[in-house]
View 1 (spheres, rainbow, N blue to C red):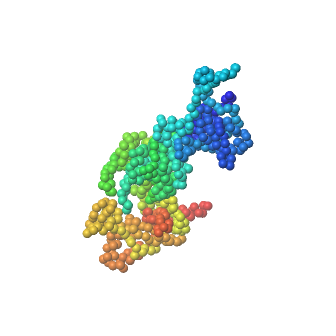
View 2: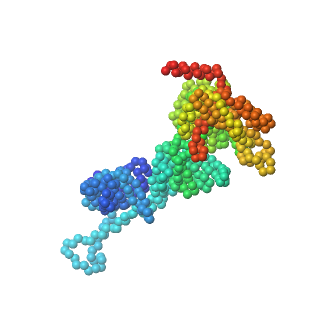
View 3: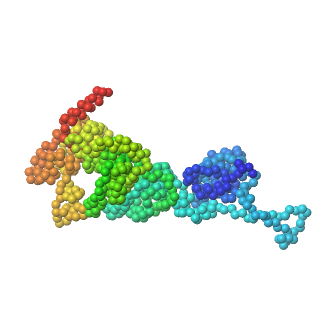
Length: 623
C-alpha cells in the first residue's frame, strides 16, 4: 500500500491520551480511516468509526465537511487527516466520542479496511475436514479452510482505562477534561479545568464579623499565557487547601466558581475572581515548568505618591541601598511580637523609598540582603502596600514575594544604570517634601492642581481606583450640628462603646478602659471660583483647621456654652487652604456617590503660590 495513503500508527491512542488539541499544543500528523460512515438526522452531519488499524473510536465529522461526503469525495473506508479535535465523554458509560473540529481529505476510499496487525500475524492454522472429525465431501482442488487468529479490537473506554491505570491523578485529570485558558473563563461556564502555577500565596488569616469567626486565605494563579486570577478560600476550604497549595508549583484546578472582581481589593489584572469551596478539585501537575513564574507590573518610585491612601498594591524593582538590623514589633491587634526589617531601594527615577519587611521576609530574606548589601543587589518585590508614613513608604503583606537579582529585563537595565551612573547620582527620598506647602508627606500641593468643578463635573470619577488632586480652596461652612467626633481608644484610636457598668470597651484591643479620647470625623464645605463641594476631614487635619483638639472643642461646648462653640467653628471659615484630596466612590442607600477626602492640608504660602501662578501663566503664553 502507498505510504502516503495509510493511517498514522497509534493515532487513536494518541487522541485518547490527549483529549483536545489544546492539551499539548502542536498537533501531530493524525490520519485515520473512516469506517461505517453514515448520516445523522437530516444529513448535515456524519458519524463514523475512526481506526488506525489497531484501535477504534466513535467519531463525528464537522458539519462543513458533510459536502465532501455528499459529493462523493469521501466514502466509506476513506482516509482523513485530523487537524483539530476534542473528545467528549458519553453519558452513562466511560466511552468517548471523537468530535472532529477540522480535517482534510487524504483519500476517497481504500479497497479494504486497514489492518495494522497483518504483518505480525501468526502463521495461519490450516484445518482439513478430517481434522474436524466430520465427514465432508471433498471437492477436487478445493483450497484448505484458513482460520486467522482472532484479533482483539479494544474500545475507547478500554484504552483510556489502560492509560489511566498507571497515570498520576493529575495526569488522569488532564486526560479527562480539556484544559481551559484563564482568559476564556466567565461566571456562566459550567465544568472547566485550568492548569496554573501558584505565583503568590497569602497567609491563613482569621476574621470576626457579625456572623461569627472564620478563616480565609487567597492565592494568585497564573496560566501558561501569563493570565492571572485571584482565588479565595474560606473556612473549611481554607483549612483543606492551605497545606496543598505551595508557592511555585503547578496544579490542575476544577469545580470552582467565578464572580466579578471587587475592584477595591483585586490584586491582579482580571475582571473576575475565583472562589473555591471544599468540593473543589486541586491536583498537582508534576514536572510542569513552562508556566511563567511571576508577573510584575512595576511602578517607578517617583510615581508612588498617587497610590498613597488607596487600596491598590504595587510592584517595585530597585537597587538595595541599605538594610537595617531586625527589630521586634508588638502588634496591637493581638499583642504578638513579630520581626521587622527596613530596606531602602533606589531606581533610575532618582528617588529612594523605605520598605518594611515583615516576618520571614525580615528574618530570612532580609538577612540574605544584609550579607550582600555591599554588592548593591537588585530586588523585585510584588504586592506592596503604600502608606504615607515618612512621606511615602512601602510595606510587605502576607502575600508579598521578594526576588533577589531576578532574571528580568527591568532588573538588568536597572543594574546597568546603577553601575554606570546611578551610584554617583544624588538620590532623594520620594517622601521628602520642601516647604510648608509640601507638608503631609504626599505629592506637592502644586502638582495635579485643579479647580473644584473638575471633580464635581464628573460623578463617575474615582470609580476604579482613588484619584488624587491638589486644591486651593476656602472653607465656606462647617455644620455645627453634625457628629464632629467619635469616642476612640487611647491605645489604638479605634471606636469604643460604653461598657456595662462603667468605662469604655475596645473591640480591637479586647479591653475595658475607664477613659477614652475624642477624634474628629467631620465634613466641611470648601469653595473656589468654580464651585463648592463637601469634603471629609479626619482628626490630624481637622485639628489644624479648627485650631484645637476634639477634646478641647467638646470642653468649650460643655463649659462655655453653645455660642462659644459655634464661634470657634466660624473662626475656621473663610480661610484659604491648600488641600491634597482623594476622590473615590462609595455606596449610600444603594446609590453610588462621590467622596472627596482631605489627605493633606497646609496654609497658603503666598510667595510659593505666586511663583506657581507665574509659572502657569508662562506656560499659557508660550503656547
